[in-house]
Image (cartoon, rainbow, N blue to C red; front, top):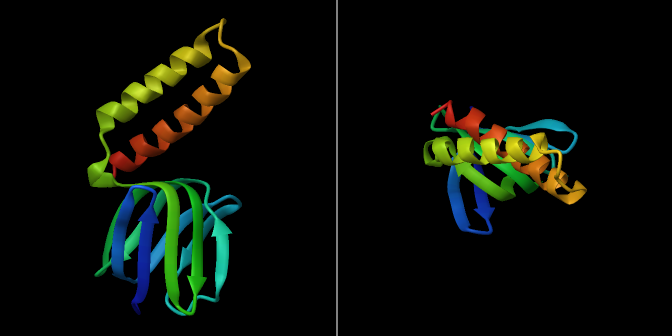
Length: 134
């Protein structure tokens, strides 16, 4: 596979800056795969597992929100949250999952609490599934 320049930048800083052979991320309309020579594009990101092939090795990450752009062969991923599988605290993700479930199972939760708990639950599920791919 041919390499292309990939930069992954989050609000917390630079997560990756180097060469890659493939990137697969979840956009708001489905998964998008990028290889060298991809046409210029910009897409909003959804919530899911990112797969990045670096030096022929697949690395996985939880990738939530933001955007991806391809301009003149350079790929820039600007997610709201990006956590490599080996950096995910599975215990913290599980605790977040349990907390969200407790709110959703509560009869006293407000509509706002329910919406926040649903979002927390989806993020926790993504992190838990990615943490299992270390």
